[in-house]
Image 1 (cartoon, rainbow, N blue to C red):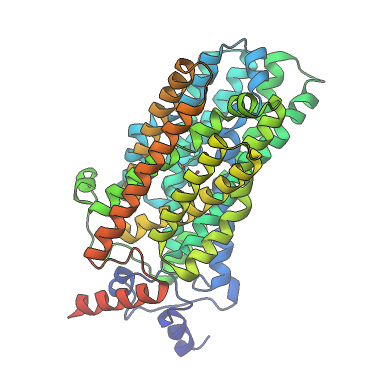
Image 2 (cartoon, helix red, strand yellow):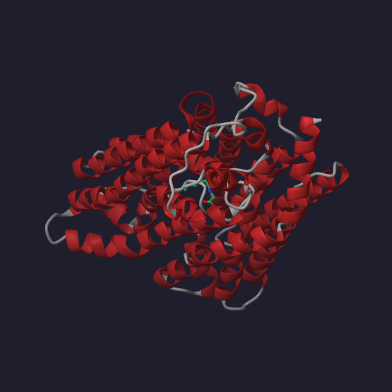
Length: 476
Ligand SMILES: C[C@H](NC(=O)[C@@H](N)CCCCN)C(=O)O
């Protein structure tokens, strides 16, 4: 490839790799560049980025698939391991509690010590080991071992999600970032949904050869294969990223700043508001779905199987619609408006389910669409607020307080149900209250962003102008 062509590829915003201010200002000028020819092998090409995206998305598949294994085999767990409901819920809460702190530390370690590549591989390994211990606990009928496995799995899974977000920003910031977040969520939620479809039939098949807790342990061991597949993706992606960094001479921290845990105190108000939305929105979705089976049985007279089908609709619709919302948001920008709309329509969905006799399929479909709209517009906002060298810390912090919210609210939700004599109205009002907090926080971001002429609710064209203006100031 001629030298001029090589330089054109690197200088062209359309085809070059990361395009934020630091990148352009930082590392690339005057460098000797040797880009390999051939579309897909060239890390600056769109084809190459989309190949990396396939591995980025599959990173989360194993984690989401295995996270919901107990939910898909709830009756089997209780019967084969002789568990009470409280012991069963411990399998889920032991996942969240350590992450109230560890996810933040995990994100920081990506910024400060491991880097994204090594961090991803380490967290993937922790997750894999956790799932293996969980499965062995099943085979040996050792509940304590299963809880230990789930604890380790949780540490790996949430920090892996931080690494996955950081990879997305590194490869797609200023390009198709919202679509990439949507696609990642889509594959992840497809993982949860496939888990609900296949785990029971696999258990029934394995029961021909093993019985009771052994059969359960073997099925969990088979589920571990999805984590092995994700591990292979982490290794391939790590290799691709190292190669891209070398060829593009990428530098995400040109000023050589050293991230510190205390950096979080210097983050601007919109980041705190995004964190509040992250808690207030997700506590009205995940715990609602976790406790959804009883809601649909009591309120709509469904059988448990029918209730499960309608309950899992949110994830199924999110799996299908997230990339489309991402694509649209990439085209029109205005992330804050999308977050506001998603929160408002989620309140509407809860209201339909609570106050009307309309089939719950309508409310749950609206909730699925709203959830995917929110995920595709909210998480990319963090990358617009926080510099790249602190992104692990920032995403880690958001997920830490999200885990705190989920751990506490799931318990509170259980208490509300117990004290309202099976009447779900109060719990629904509780969820709608949290969504109202998310709505107010979004309004405050909008006002703050307007006042400070920020880029959070701009169109892509306005954002490009905004970046050039900042770059101009940078060199002035
Ligand atoms: C995108 C968002 N991610 C999260 O909520 C993270 N805490 C990762 C969850 C991992 C699954 N156990 C989402 O899933 O909507």
